Length: 133
Image (cartoon, rainbow, N blue to C red; front, side):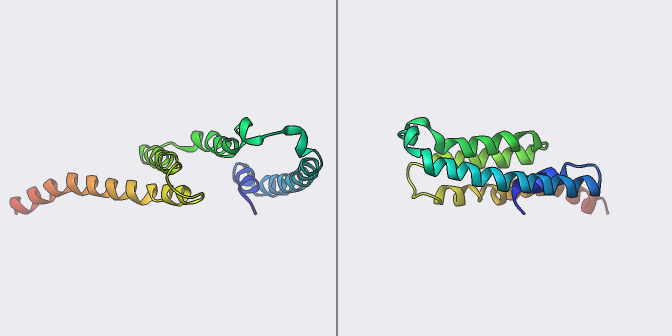
């Protein structure tokens, strides 16, 4: 079970279609992954310097392109935005892999801020109700 197969399965209207989508996606990815790995192993020298192509940014860019349409609420957009800022901002100063872990802190940070904002807006109402008794 991987991201792609799960996404395709969840997008289907029925259980049968979900199973078919999951299976077809899984088999397609399995075959294509192995074929392209073999091609890469045999022909990697032809590409040259991969750092010059910026291929290290292709994976995250594709992930963001797939994720963007699913961000429907302000909380989701704020979380994604903060995660991107944390990840990119910390990239030059932290060892590889650590910025991604730091970006994961965006979710609890946004939820904490959202809870604080909600608590502030409900407190005056609770006080008014207490005073009116």
